[in-house]
Structures are given as C-alpha cells and as structure tokens.
Image 1 (cartoon, rainbow, N blue to C red):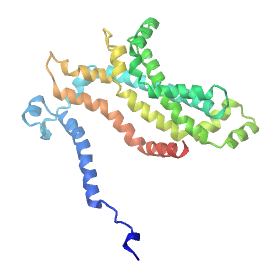
Image 2 (image 1 turned 135 degrees about the horizontal axis):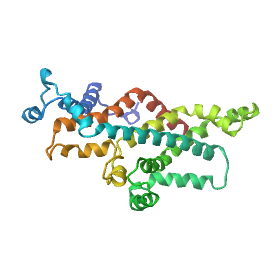
Image 3 (image 1 turned 180 degrees about the vertical axis):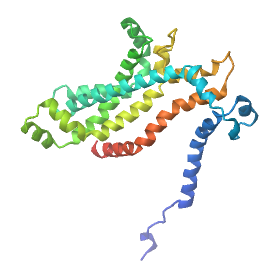
Image 4 (image 1 turned 90 degrees about the horizontal axis):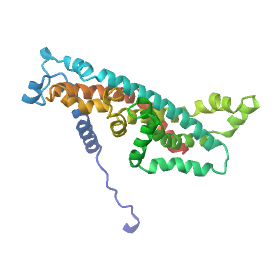
Length: 289
C-alpha cells in the first residue's frame, strides 16, 4: 500500500502531562482560598512577619470572626444579603418559569418578538442603564432599600432564566400536557402539577447561578444602596469593601480575611452540595436546547 494512503500520526498529550497541568491549575486556584482561610486565624503581626506560614495552634484568633460579625456589622449585612438573594432568586425562578412556559408552549403572534426582547437583556449590559435606574428608584422611593435592590436583581435575572427554561419547556412532550387537560386539569394545574416538576433540572440550574451572581454582586448594590447614611440596606460585598477601614482608619487584615471567608462560605457550600444538579442541568439544557 502506498504511503500516501497511510493515516498521519496525530499529536497526543500524555496522560501524566495532562494530570500535571490540571493539578497545577487546581493548586493555583485553591491555594489562595486556603491561604485566606488560615490567615483569618492569625493576628496581624503573624500575617506581616511570616505571610504564608500556618497559624500557631496555640494562638488561633477566632475573635477575628467575632469582631467581623459584630464590629464590622457583618451580621446585619449577612441578613440583608440572605433576604435579598432569597427573595430575588425566588421571584426570578417563579416569574421566569411562567414566562418561559407561556412563550414556549402557546402560540402568539408577538411571542417571538417578546422572546428576543428578553434575550436583548443578555446582550445589552445592564450597567448602561444604571443612571436612569438610579433616578427611577429615587422617584419611587426605593433608593437605599432592600426592596429596590430586589426589583433590580429580579429584572436583571429574568432574561437568563427565560432563555434557559424556554428550552426545557419546548423539549417536553405535548402529549403530557394534553393528557393532563383530558384528566380535568386547568392551565394552571397542568403547569404546576405536571410541566413544572419535569423542568426541575433547569429550575435548579437557574436558581444556583442566580444565587451565586446575586450573593456576590457589588456594582448595583454600591450604586443603589451604598449611599444610605445608616447603611441598613447594605449587603455583604459592600460590608467587605468597607471592612479595611473599620478600626480607627487602620487595616485589620485578620478581620478582613475573616470577612472574606464569611462571604465565600455560603457560595462554596451551595456549589459543593448542588454541583451534581449544576452539571445535570447544563447537560440537559445542551441536549434539549
């Protein structure tokens, strides 16, 4: 056989090299998180004298967390973030599911236009509307309030929710809906009892991504509630930004690292507990969309 018909050898990377690259990347990502975590248990002197050393087991400074929670008002900021995030994610998932179901399952002459109008919210940066949004919330009396922030987060998260959930609802067999109607279910009952549970992977995926995005969101929180005199509506990212100047204009790095851990722990916990649902939802959306 002529050599012209022989397949050319393909360039492949060895398994050991790939493992080395992945482990190196994992160490690059994980080490800063571990460094912040154990540095939060050290006094300032130990952080400055030997930055990367482990804390002294006999001198673990758990009081850094106590001072961050009380002195830096992280307790209040944590409750604000939990309230704003929970309500916003619930509204995004609930309203997004109903809108996506209506756009995916029912015919309307303007349905395609409305769907692309929602998608425009993904293509156009929301930060471009922050100036008119600021004056609109001030006119409504919702500036420097948690409910104003919830309204903004809900509107900002709906395009992503509708985009993801519409693909799930389009993939569901119409025969299930018809069988529910034949059994005597109304439109709302068929949606709530039959169609919505089948879209659970998409609902969980949307909820997780929106939770992570809203929990760590800083820009809108700074623009819309950061100017409050009493700071009663501030969230954790704003508290973390102000933490370095809480102790008589002196940076307290032990307390700062403790604040970073308090902000990061809920996100890590949600991701670790629900990572299986994230992968399943993304895979299902890729196949069904």
